[in-house]
Length: 116
Image (cartoon, helix red, strand yellow):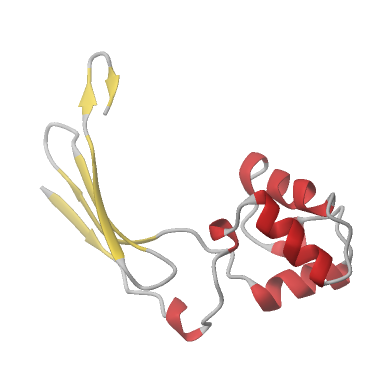
């Protein structure tokens, strides 16, 4: 079995909530508080969930001011891989750290009919 261990990130120091924790209506409410039109929430979600950007600067149809507000208010990181173990049968076990410091574990099992 091959094991890969990575250093833990210090996301807790930012104390910013993850942007991925917001639902569409919550993002619309936040934008309204910032003086921004609520249709921007759809644009932001498009960047996050369809285009899968990893930083706010790539959100080119948003103003620099809004991108700065997002950056100052929300963490955009997703999962941080702490441990990856690969077995001889192709099964992969992961230990991920969430933005709030908690960890989750998951296993990817490869089968003839697909992955589980």
